[in-house]
Length: 335
Image (cartoon, rainbow, N blue to C red; front, side, top):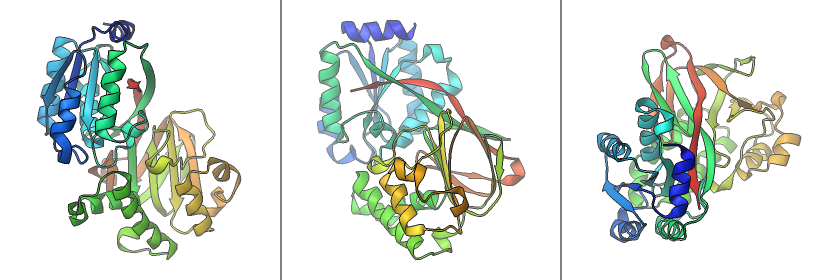
């Protein structure tokens, strides 16, 4: 079935809607019965609970077998990443349903780049109302990252990071998660702690440079000592920041910082505030150790842990360069 036909069925109110509900997701766990009750009111919905990788795959297979037109994912970034990976690995893109994401996890970077509502209950209620009104669907096409290295299965997702950002995510999985704070407040507490270390020029432990010796993109090869690198197809990250200032016409935003750089306090503020005009015209120049580009392909030589949508992986340089590319456009419903 073509995407055009799926859109028409949503508009006519007779679309098949499959919904994957992860009751263990960070912002769903405490109110799962209430949120599930709202989701069950979505017209034409078939709801399945799933908590593990095999369950996500099994549920996706079931939904594609029956030909759902809209696949709603009520979960966090990790669940979304697992489902995207299964779709890219096992299905022709023509067979995909339109995707919709309800922000149910701890950070929800992918969902919050697509929808206006950061509360899962509010988002679910608005989606149910939206579908009930039989609108002309508002769609957004976004590229997905493909991360690959020789001898390792491909990984798909929306956000890649290595260095201090990856270590912050590792820390977030430790005992601090027991304080039961979720969402951007939780992520903000961790960010503040790590930024304090940057201000005081800490260079050991969590603040040690990324074990990355080469960054190759848009015909350039950078070899230095870098604090971190991140790459994403999302237009905004946590707190609505946009820490990109590349000018190239390409789908992947890439930003990386040298370990030894100038104008730290002023530059870090420009980064976290997402002041794109400052980033383009002001202090963040290559000579000061700040780099940002848009690219279709990035190759890294690293011996370090990295994250994709909050999930942890490891790369070894002996396996060759780690390649990040745009896997293809995915159609999302926005509301």
